Length: 116
Length: 107
Image (cartoon, rainbow over all chains, first blue to last red; front, side, top):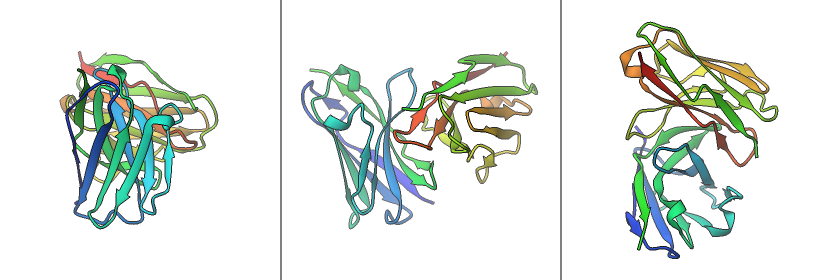
């Protein structure tokens, strides 16, 4: 059974960079796209972007200038960096596996609060 | 971006009722439409993929239909454990976009 687990600081100061890692267990990270999705409290889901195990990326244009994703296949991990954060970036961040155009496995989510 | 419009935004129904949620895409997305269930404090769970295919392990009371721009998600007989918010999601074009969600409550 594939499992995903997000990790990283729960509190980030405004203007700094949010950094999260997703660790995949129970299966290989290879040959899939992997995504980050976020959800502000009480609101809907926003796709941040995706990364293939080759390192190829696609980002949501609304965040593209601030987003960097990377993958480390040796550790079965992929990561998200979001720069110049503001309070509007406060959300639960999920990592998910993309399987044939659908998100079939999700992490439990991690709350990131942007506050000084 | 493709806009996904879900309706209603919330509904209240009795146990055993048939529940229907609609999702309209701002342009033709073929059948590249998935449905997710999200319970409070939990990650979304895939229920239906490619508009009408039931994900493995998902109860058969859940179903989906549609293609092009108009899609429907149905719970044939609402159960107490179905209380959740349901989201549609398109994967025809990037960026991937989600509907605004439909919160389902028990009357």
